[in-house]
Length: 157
Image 1: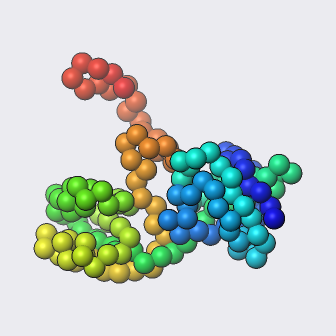
Image 2 (image 1 turned 90 degrees about the horizontal axis):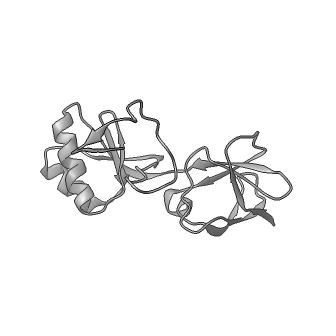
């Protein structure tokens, strides 16, 4: 069994491991590469894998992580205030959310779909990779922002 124990920043992958969101949240597990070979993942506890992440073993093999398509509820809306309200109410329920320009996704749940419909939106179930926001304090994937030097209430970031 191949033992993937290191997350790396760059390299040329020789294999792919496609995983749904719930498995990408595990730091230790057994899985099967897309080509059928067995792998064990042994990463620092609390590690969440993102689409495109690279892992390696002690021999230098590089594996690219791919987010699997899975059932998600998708809401498309041009009204940013209405979409923000949906994000607020879903976030209040600690639902993991993927937020893009005019698009909101969460793992499919008919109860949440009904709540979102009650807000005036029309969720639909689709098969798509799920890449939720990592959270304000939660590691994983970094996003670049052009406005690093700004302050709030007298303290700087």
